[in-house]
Image 1 (spheres, rainbow, N blue to C red):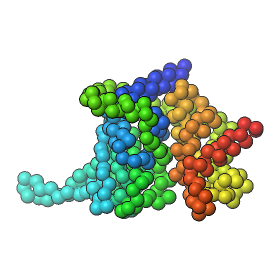
Image 2: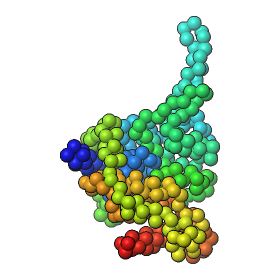
Image 3: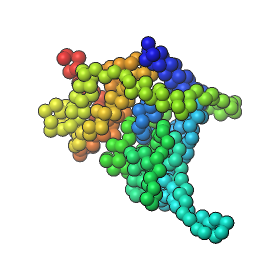
Image 4: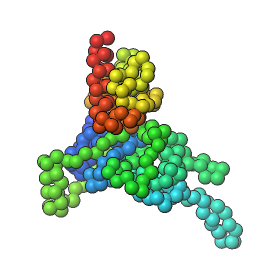
Length: 331
C-alpha cells in the first residue's frame, strides 16, 4: 500500500511539473519528458537542434519549477577546464599570511547547461565529462563531491560545423540520451508569436524540492523489471552489433560499431521513469520501445555504405526496433 501511494504521489507530482513547464515551453513534450527522465535516472542529456528552439529556456524553467540551482556555461574555443570546475585562489588574512582556497566553478550546480559543447576543445570537454561521470571535482589533493541531483544538459548545433570539435564516441556514450529538438508546428509557432505580441509574463510554481526529487527517484528505482522485458532490452542492443549472430540485417549492412552495454542499462533505467510517469510500477516492452531511439541513436556508428546510401540513425534504428519487437511478440 505504501508503495502504491508513493507511486500515485510521484506520478501526480511529475505530471504537475510537466504542466508547469508547459506554461513556458510551447510544445516539445517529448523533449521535456526526456530531460525529466534523465534527471530522475541520474544521467545526463545531449540536445541537438538549431538555435532558438527553447533549449536554454527549458532548463532554466526546470530549475524554477524544481527549486534547483541552475548555471549556464557558454562553450567557446578559449574556454579552459578551470572555467568549468573552478580553481585555487590565493587569499591573505589580516596578518598578511597567504593561503590557497578553492573557488568552485559553475559545475557546482544541480542543473548545468553546457551550451554548444562542441565549440570547446577536447581538453575542456573532458573536464566536464569527468565531473559528469564521477560526480566529483578534484583540485590539488582535495576531492569535492557534487550535490545530487546533478544533471548536465549539453547542446550542440547540427548545422554549424566550422570551428567545432565534435564529441568522440566514447564521450557521447556518457550521455544517457540524445534528443533531437525539432521545429514547432504551425499552431505552436502561432502560440509563441502570440505570447511575444501580447508581452505575456508567465509565472510558474515550484512543484518539487531537492529532497522530493530524490524521493521520486527512489520510487523509479523500485520499478519491477520482468525477465522478458530485460531480455528485450538486451536483444535490442545485440541487434545493433554487426557480425554477431543476433545482428539485424540493417546492422550488418550499415552499422560499423553497435551500442555498448551502457545502451541496455540506459534503456532499463529510462524505461523505469517512463513507466512511473504513466502510473505503473512495472517496466513494459512499450516503455523500452518509447525510450530506445533517444538512448541508442548516439551509441551506433554508421559505416561508409550508410553515408553513401543516405542512411542515418533515424532511418536505421526504427527498422531494427520494429524487427526486434516482432521477434519478442512471437516468443
